[in-house]
Structures are given as C-alpha cells and as structure tokens.
Image (cartoon, rainbow, N blue to C red; front, side):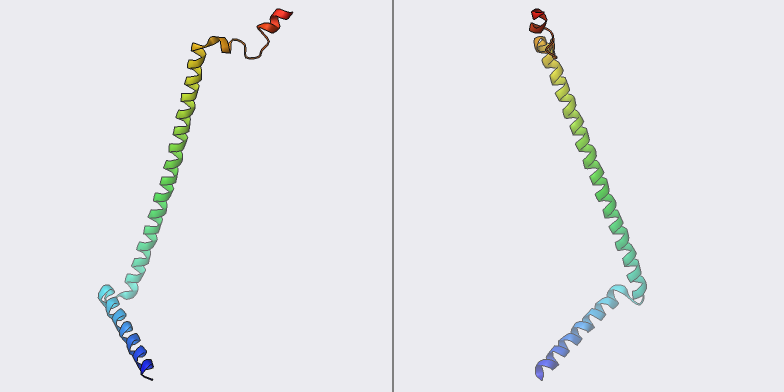
Length: 103
C-alpha cells in the first residue's frame, strides 16, 4: 500500500514540475506559443532540406567538373604522346605499311 502512495506522490510532483516549467517558459498564451514553435520547427526543417539539396547539387557539380578536367588531361596526354611518337599513329587501320608492299 505504501508503494502505491509513493508512486502517486512522485508522479504528482513530476506533473506539477512540468506544469510549472511550461508556465514559466510559455506564460499565459501556451497554445499560441506552441503554434509559433511548430512554425519555427517547420521553417528550420525546410531550411535544413534546402541546405542539403544545395550541398548535393554542389557535390554533383564538383564531381562533373573534376571528371571533365581529368578527361581533358588524358586527351592532352594522348596528344603529347602522338607528337613525340608519330610512328605509332602513322596508320591505325593497318592497311598501309607491310600490307601495301605485298600488292
């Protein structure tokens, strides 16, 4: 029996503390402040979502830019190799050279 009374007492003290805290934080216009908080939380959520979307777009742009730069570097490297070793690019189809001499 005493345990039941103790738990009721502890619960009533917790409820009273919560009510006192709410009265201190929100004052007489609890309902209005709660709605204001909801709008604030919704706005914060939208702002976070916008920042995440912008981050994804930025990351995608960065990756595509780096991929283009890498492709350009490889292309320049191939062109430089062709300039320094023109014999490897003389006839890529294989029709010239030895095949032309046999005719």
